[in-house]
Length: 210
Image (tube, rainbow, N blue to C red):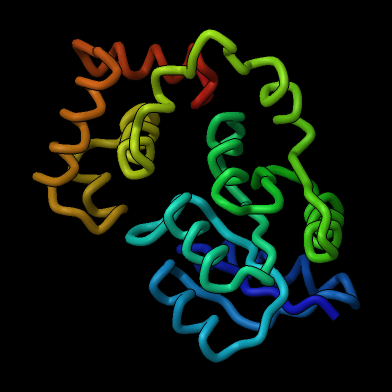
């Protein structure tokens, strides 16, 4: 029996995932968490084989959370379930210690198959991302957004998707000043002059849907 902890800040998503996993007799939900901080508490008291992890959450999240899980619980497999169908984000997650990366629009049977494979020591990459990972690699250098920190990339994607400073601050539990600082730094790193430049870049590099 593979014991799973579901980590997502949306209760309706966690509920839906539990319903899907209930269809597989060899999988069991051992716990759930709505944040990285809550996951720490759950992992300290619950035995599990795999963490099914959302990348985008307030507080401790993304690559930083993956690294923490990998270092603190090296025997626990990590399968990322993300809204971002973007090769560079998947690559960051895998380099940090995740064994698999899957997008949230995947079919339930693919999710169950990915969990089984990752839990038994294998690796799984969403089929839609394989081509991107293989062919979008630039041997002459990395894409500009790869220079961003994990939090800067998170803020970048939220701005690119049309969120305001206040909305991002509420979603990430940050102050408006902190979000503005992140935006200033990422705009400078990316050499953007306007917010339109930011959105155009995100669409061109398939970081968001155009």
